[in-house]
Image 1 (spheres, rainbow, N blue to C red):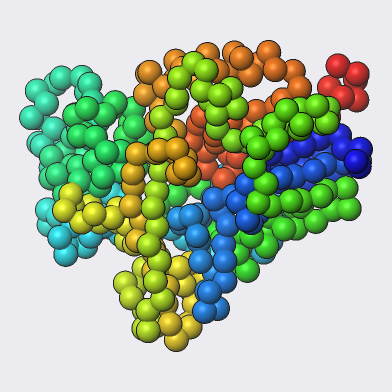
Image 2: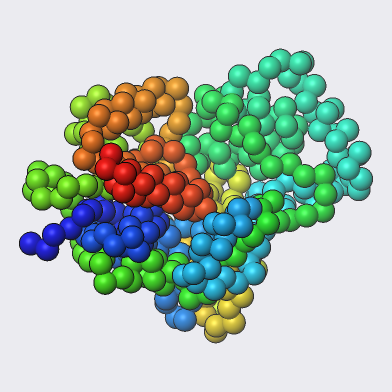
Length: 375
């Protein structure tokens, strides 16, 4: 067998950045991926000349110039700006909540008028400190926006009533008293021209990196542990330890995509359906990410569901019970000297793409520094 320095379990963003940096330092790596493709959840596939985001919308954004410079090595980015809209029973509102939203909803024109309306509606809480998501949302944006644009969408997304969800989920809800529809405040934003898969391919394109897809780590776990001196594991941390302390909770997603014989279905890349009756949470029209002018279009309806074995885990459920259980698994991981745990599932944490890259760079630099100093 070829002598490898590292086995990377998972060809998503964390594993691919780690592999790229380690290979540059002269390390030989084998990357295995259980799916039949690289790039993890940011995988894009060209259909009808359109880059389709197979696992949901991914818009790269960061305020860190070092991270922005880093990704420029692997792709040229377009100037797409994330400006989703909400559809509530046929009524259209801008997201994030801003003066365009408030004007449509209440007829207000100035920030002062909007703030006064929010303050008026917050009075239903009677000064109570928010104890759940419903109360937290009302304290930030009032009852009207909560009822139309938050309640139904959030309950579909998490599978629970809003008054049963923790307040912290929505604590950083973006509310802007400006006429600005840009969802992110970050300095840099865009989508790789040619798709994310091509970007990750460039990360993994190195003579010291071997990649195999369609490979299940757990089918030969003991073999891998015996044959590789170091392993970078980016899967579910509780699965690695055979769920010995219990299962962590995740939310999963189901996607329904279709090609439509029209050049423009909804006029926007992302439309959230915020009423409780519509079964899906949002519809993505992929061509708008790239300002496409193809004769056809491709849409994807996104449904949220509770994770079950066999599903892809997309979002950790970071409530008190799961966070405490994760801490116990993290303590076990810290004692597992051969294995480095990383990524969204290895850290049981919701990461944006720029955060994954930053975490991977920090991890690989620490690893290489320790190796060079003989630790």
